[in-house]
Image (cartoon, rainbow, N blue to C red):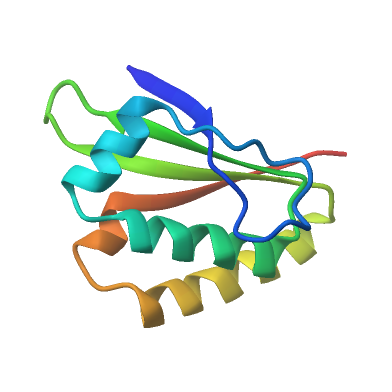
Amino acid sequence: MKVADTIPPANAQAANIGTARADSVRDFSRTNNLDEFLRIAQELAEECFSPDAIECELMRDDETEDAWLIVRVRVKDSPENVLAAKKRYTREWIARVPWPQRHMIRLSYDIND
């Protein structure tokens, strides 16, 4: 089961990003002290990908009862450029976010033509 909603932009230039977060995403983030790290994930996604949209989803594994947030970016770019952006994002993410919080917020990207 997953709950999807859009997270607010870190800056006003990301015009296509909505402003509401689902209660379940917000509750999970607060319960696990992830608000600051979710903000970092969003900022890095904006800096590295220049996405058309950023969404955040709460994911749950019913078998293991694990839960995590997925930050999904939608980009219009070549696969090569997106891969380079992913590498920049990952390098900064590892440098700025400690474990286990780093494991509780994950990145996904969709390339739109």
